[in-house]
Image 1: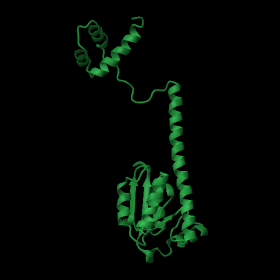
Image 2 (image 1 turned 180 degrees about the vertical axis):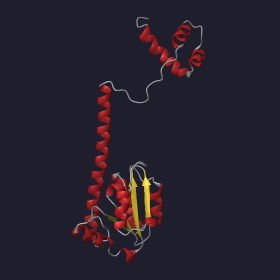
Image 3 (image 1 turned 180 degrees about the horizontal axis):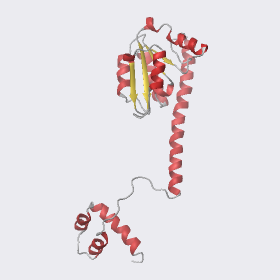
Image 4 (image 1 turned 90 degrees about the vertical axis):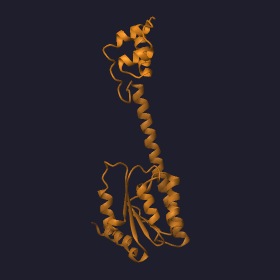
Length: 222
C-alpha cells in the first residue's frame, strides 16, 4: 500500500474508537457478485466483522433488510463506513434522505472511503457541512444519472434489436402433431374451442391464438 493511502486510512480510522461504535455497510447488486473487495476495505478501516451489514440486491431503493437493521442499530457518535457512494444507493433523492436520517436524526457520522471529502467527522462547522452536502449532492446526481443512462441504453438496444427482427422472451412451444387435423375439425365446427384446446394439450386462449395465426399462414386468401 502506498504511503499516501496509509496516511489516508490512518486519518479515516483516527478517533473512531472514542467517537462511538464503528459500522460498515456493504452492497452488491446480485447474489452472484462478490463482496470480498468491499470486505477487505472494511477490515483495513478497522470495522469489526460483526458490525458489517451486507445486502445482495439492487441499490434502486432502500428497501433492504440489512440496511434497515443497520440504521436501527446506529446511534449518536457512531461511525458508518461505506466503500463508495453508489454502494449506499443509486437514487439521488433517496440517498440525500438517508444521509439526512443518519447524520441529522441518528447523529452518526458517515465516511465514504473512496471520497475522503465525504467524511462528516471533518469540519463540524457550518462551512465543512456545506462542502460535504454540496459534494454529496453532485455525486448522488451523477450516480442516478448514470443509472438512467444505462436504462436508456438498454431500451435503445432492445428497440434496435426488435427492428432487426430479434425476438425476446421464451420461444413458443412447437404445435402438437395433431394440431392440423384438430384445427380443421374446429374450423368445421365439429369441435368447440375448449375441446380442441384439450385435445392439443393447450390452454383455450393459446389454442385460439395459434389457430388464428395458423389459419392466416396456411390459408392466406381465406
